[in-house]
Length: 333
Image 1 (cartoon, rainbow, N blue to C red):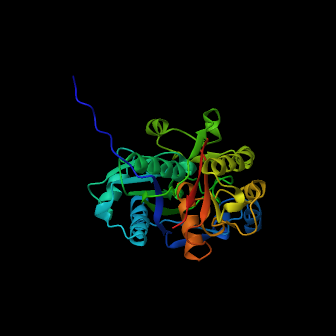
Image 2: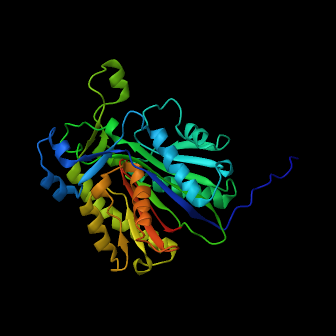
Image 3: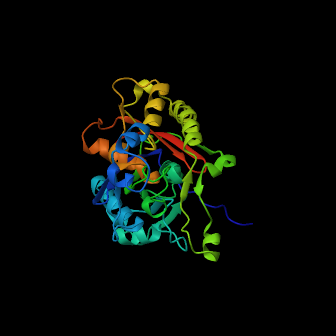
């Protein structure tokens, strides 16, 4: 008879120990975008709330931006790279799919022996990865996880497409998650609506591109339908995440949703019944929609400006292509 297997003993909970961000040097205003589409600055601001976004240069790849954000998060957390057990990268714009980017990121950060894998859940990817990291820490499989959202959306967006060209930007955000004696990450509420996946998708497959190299596959989005879906979904899953964490909207220090559109952010904040003391992230104005990077970038923005109390609670909500969504309540570092 085989011997009984030994199960690892995990922590009671996990918590965010540090946050880091990387924004490319090049800042692109609406006027530059409008040179290629039939639009103007006023229309873009009114429709999306976006004023500027960052576009990555030749040396600013998904990997290099992720490394910079990850190292900043590790430094803030006081965790050495050698203590990292796992690197999770959330990205929809990493084009070298032959192998995951996370192992290269771990190596470049000095965490070469850490496990690493990529997660493809588009704009919900960071919240998906955070939920997985929390579960692994509580299961005893790992102690320290670097969770990164990194995107180079300028590679997959058509600069002449009026529906998407003004929306997206590039950048990376990261957190370090570690064990805690009390839960610092609430239960994740997540799911998909796969029957609507075509609402945000590339206009042609890579297989088609192999047979007919031009044009390059780019992202397309049915903006009105996605907007209506998000207006309904974000407050719904946000409310479920609050209930799962055992708190109410009145307990929140911050609401940090995916930065898709300022009208979605404001509508969700209103429907959730947030109090005047709750800070609402609106990093979309300067960063645009950075897909999987938007939640950690917005968190870093609020923390770096001193707008959030240490140890306060924040509701995170990711949503987008798939259609996929995820939400959880976290304790801020």
